[in-house]
Length: 82
Image 1 (cartoon, rainbow, N blue to C red):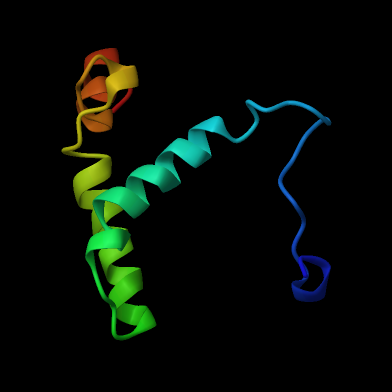
Image 2: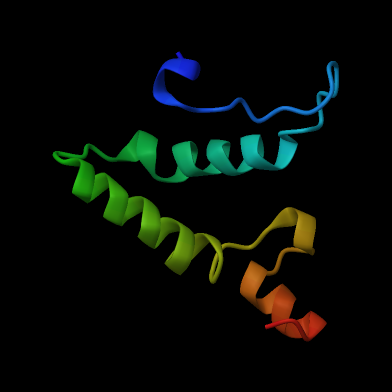
């Protein structure tokens, strides 16, 4: 199916179970915190909600365990990156 739509699977070497750990964690959060609680009538509604979740909530407000319970934006500010 990937080939049919001109897509390439995102994988590295065989047997590396940690390749997609970060992406899997993000998508789990997205599903549990947004998608499973909403019913979208159109793709535009879904697209807008996902954009707002990522740009407004996930990156700027949500506290991340892996960042000592600060938001991504605050972590980058503290590190002098943002």
